[in-house]
Image (cartoon, rainbow, N blue to C red):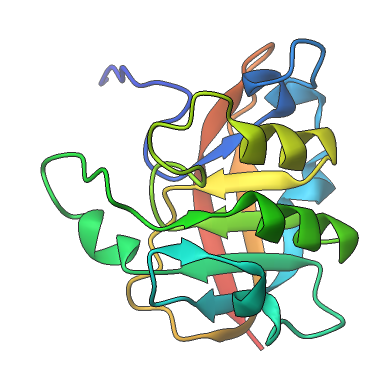
Length: 168
């Protein structure tokens, strides 16, 4: 037998609304079907994901994963503060587009040092399922079926996930 010690936001993980919202759902209160979605992997090469980067998002898509320069940082042994993040305007645009699932390839979708966590709060209030720390380094842009089941952790604000992409 082995013993594991890890946090709810270790590696590839999902943020439950309770992570930032006092009355938000915990990870065990979210139905499992919400962790499965048709997604489009969008590659963004600049330091932030803005509304302009979302224009190539296909109309029928309800999930988006952002492949960025962050993919290179995931293998570093130290934390990199200048990672690519999602702007508040882009988050609001995705909510209006009825996007139900968003993922990014680093430890946070929020700009480093943001004290208010507006992007997280806005997305989680809209019941968008939010994945962080995804390994997208070798994933080409395109459409996929995404599955990211959390551990069944009662009352927790998030969970590590085993994220899977299936090509179509």
